[in-house]
Length: 399
Image (tube, rainbow, N blue to C red; front, top):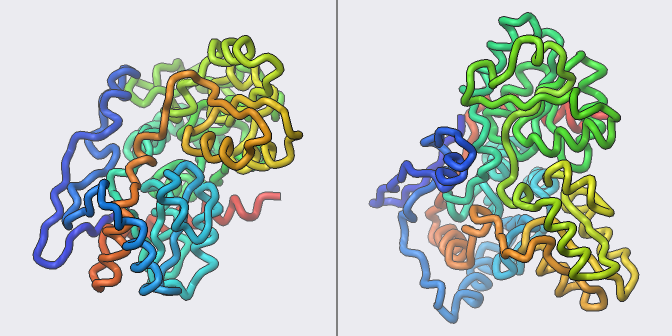
């Protein structure tokens, strides 16, 4: 379990129940989890977004804090926030960067909730991990709750399958899901090492329960491990037995959880066809969280770090359509003016929850630290952290 301390002296944090992912869940025919997309009303007074002194205030607060604070900025963050990050990267790289800064009293994680949890798991007890806005959640991570996954495991156990199933959980999952994975002898994976993680898992057992992103699991299993689409079944936690028969569960190699990224999941094969017609000679480069048919239609597929490095190495004058989060696409386009870089979909789409971390929230967080009143601390319960860390360490031990 994770706790979040949002209160300031003399003030009470107000928690609201309606999750940001409610509409998405309803569209998927799923009941919304009331704990989804953790969010609070800010217990302090946020600076106005129009305040012309925000940059100066952030710089001043950061200078006062010095090496006591270490700011992490995920690649999908706004430019106005990333400019203050000490390091940038994907979720796991940032968590490891935090662990490598034991002298930093405060870790300010400009990302989303599960990322801050991972940083808390990997850092020392005396270090405090802060999330500038607790409403910065992840709809994908919230599509798999501990209760749902335990119920799924009970189904597998009743069918006599639990002993041969190895759980593999994507880094984009809650601490509770990582702990479940560690409890049952599984491993965590990133979009960079998913192939290695699945190869290891199939050496330990006959089947894999992949959480929570169906697309990364399917794309890796079929495109990199050589399994067929028929080897994969989709487990829907809102249906009895996941909407599957006992035979389907027994025969499957990959039991994929019915979850997805709300940004990468929006790209379609039509988007690929349209951009090829609109931009002749374009290279289509997408993230493996995209749908299978999108990945199959792309020219290049890889993690966020892979996308960045591919653009850095690309020849001047080349054309690229990127199927990933828009903040990153715009940043890459600005960084490489010698190349034509466009968003794969004509419709604009930011990661709505990642985008909640803005400059006013960062300034509020830093100035609160200067005042000696840390806000929005993320802590993971010791028993949960221990099991989650076991799964993370298994990932680090992958051959």
